[in-house]
Image 1 (cartoon, rainbow, N blue to C red):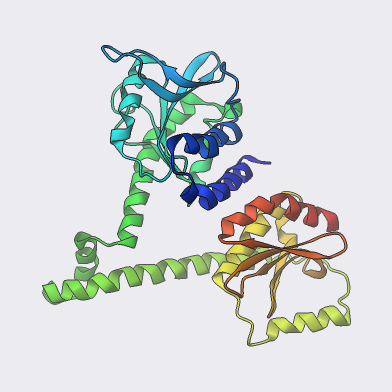
Image 2 (cartoon, one colour):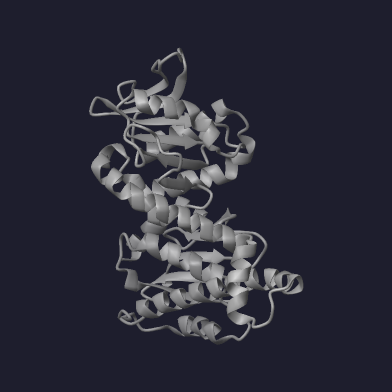
Length: 359
């Protein structure tokens, strides 16, 4: 599997199992070691690559240990401190990382509970770990923009110079994105006042503040939804600009095409987002312009060459339980229950096999 596929597969596992992993040791076994192995690419059972319970006495501190030290080209490059997955991460949890960072050659430190990974370096002062991470990865909500930088930490692509040079921008861009996201979720008084004074000409009274505290998040939510809708529509339109040549449509196919004109058929945002994921997976083996979609009453079909006889996958999103439908060579469909759209990535191999079968 490709890097992003392995990451999304682990993200699905973390999302489904995090609530059941209660201890630090269980977190290491269930989430941290698989991350080191499958994402970073190091052999967790080879002490020349991964040193568990790493000890480096610092000053008067003796016998303290950091959970993992990762070795690359004979030098310790990454230190990892783990906490239980049910707990939130705080900078206080990183006290040992601060001390060990100065005592080793490592330029990268990671604090994790298996779900969230916070990566640190020494931008503010040489050989002294920063108080704020330069990269944050939340496996419950993967930010695709950080994946290229995360990949530079992997064994096959380790590039410390590039990581450090990009770390300052990553640090502040990431912090700004998290601050903006927090304002969208729960707007502060300053955020509400900032927008209110631009649309309301009266005095900013207590009553006005209360009124706009409800209106501002509603407006931002609608704005974001509209922008996502526009981007999806633009992407889908662009994909249809060069329609492929398809075989003549039979009467059965024509009848099914007519379903797309049924006013009872409503294409949802989730279906469009699911389509984009399937299309992104399938384009590894076929031209992305050949991957098309048709909506019907009972399911949303992803097709090759807009041909109903060449189904890549079906999205059954009309009920409370969502299903991803995958078809074998005989067109027999197997429905796989999914809770979140990211779980589609776990079936990337079957999706690509279906697309390649027709191609």
